[in-house]
Length: 609
Image (cartoon, rainbow, N blue to C red; front, side):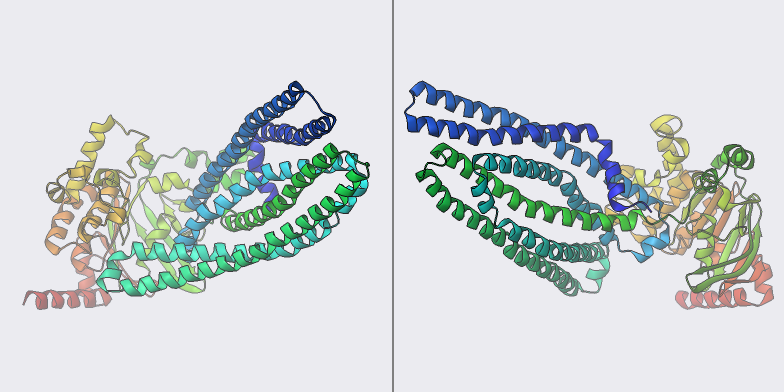
């Protein structure tokens, strides 16, 4: 595992030119600023001797020039260093999102979306502050401290040593408060993640919240979480309230000592009035590094705490990856090519769709889900999975698409272990319609065509006209075209977040059209017509039969009417296949399938009466 600092340094080195130029501007800016007290020293000393007006104008012009040049370099200093930190923030955010995209479903089932969003926004901003402003002020602070201290020693070493007496107390204050600030900031960031998660859940489930009149309860839950966030921030503010005044007190004490002893040195003639003014200016400039040191320390503590929170995600290894890439990192290139060239050359269209499960055993942690499942589906067949809730149907098909990773040598397509396919090829050959359809806050057309560009490349084959025709054809099969005709904007209708403007049936049919439009070799329907009325279901199934004849199809459903025409039906119970055959064969067998069939017939009769 790469140490946190080294991994962070990798991002910084990408923009080393900007950082080096920016730090060069820091040196020039600091040098110019530190030259001003010396000019004041000469000007004051000349005033005590009685100088001409022209000489005073010369000093004034010099100070004005220093101010202008310093302002120009200060501008470039901020532009280069802050700009580099913004570029790093951009890279980190892209890398963070790209890594999230690689993580398996199990990771998102155990981590809240709001918490991940907080790490990608608030924590990342704290890291940016550490990389940009903190580096800029650290360099400025260090240079100012060294040069100002050297100039003070050159004026009066004894007075300098006396003025530095309070500095050890400043260091003790920083050491004591710094670690406490770090701990409290970690607690704040954790609670901010909690606030984000609560808000995200409430907004995502707004229909349920309103349907059960839980607005007040959700508001109270958010208020409690937000109040805890406020409380933790107030604790940090209280700590900082002691921290900064304590530093100001010790620095002010040093200034008081210098004012008392320095004035005596001027009266005795040991230093000139100009040197005393310059000394005080340098002491004032020295107080900024001490104050800035505490502020920079605070930013560094916050930044490292946030970087470690981001690394908790970034260092989570994806459990599902391409086997070819994994073997290429462990074997000689010639060996990898000879073993995998045929698979790596695959295109989703080249897959025929013969599916086989061989003695498949699978569990989520310690909870077994599938127990010694063996089944074969020929290319072009339509198979159905039937069983009570929790029997393992959805898990079985998720393993086929490697949404969860199956054990080696347990799931095959065309005789090849699915773990050996490049993931892009495997998933590009599968059109998957989940139980709970997810729609993006986009147009209806773009939601249907979501996977089309990934199959055909950007723009698709034949341009926008071909794309529109495919969208319309897929919508017609899903019987969505009738609804679209009633929409004022047709396929350009915005569906809202998660498709909130559509009914449950319309969302399911949109998800079905999304799977059909990519023309997959394997079509998987996971209870995807549950929200559709029986009449519309029959219309969809009638049109789907023509589509399914050209590809391997797997239908998961609790409705017998949906699966009765399948070539083969597998009945699952407690993770095992307990029956298999056609509809007529299973009804005659008078087993679990026949029992489910009788129950549904009775329900239909009761509903009709």
